[in-house]
Length: 114
Length: 114
Image 1 (tube, one colour):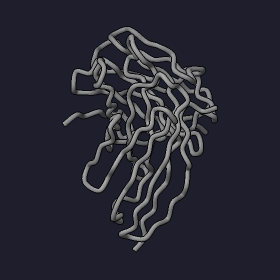
Image 2 (image 1 turned 90 degrees about the vertical axis):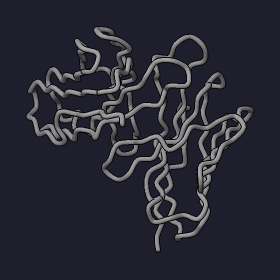
Image 3 (image 1 turned 90 degrees about the horizontal axis):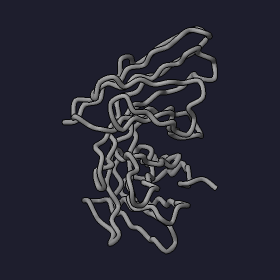
């Protein structure tokens, strides 16, 4: 079974704090993704990575950065958390190649920024 | 226009009913199509891929109409356990490499009641 784990299920942070969300996958997937999910807005892609040390902006990268130092691990960083970053954060991973786009998601991290 | 559009519902149906969800996508070059299912407060999971000729998996039937850029999901003999949000998902990039990026619709909420 593919397993994608996220470091925390729930987090409460204060405005201005630096926040690290970690994601680990055990299937040797090349691609990893970070999304946020908000009511009425669906899943929105923040950043993705197709290889170690490679990263690409998604649709809403502002206020976020990422790090991929190892193939199995993809970190999302909120440099200075703001209340509008309160959301559900979902990590996903997939193989590269046509026909292998199925993304496997972690359980999500519910972040509350006060 | 959104890249992937779905009727958000909610759809409330009795057990045993047949229910259909529709989805339209804007990029005519899209090549891969999927339905994901997301249970309340859980991560999305692949329900089924959608093939050009249409495909069936038990009580679930998926259809693709490329000319109309339209995807559908039919659920027959609904069960209580089918209650979830159903996400229409498209790989919008044709040719080259998409790095596995997918575009998710906002989801259609289904509630099956006794």
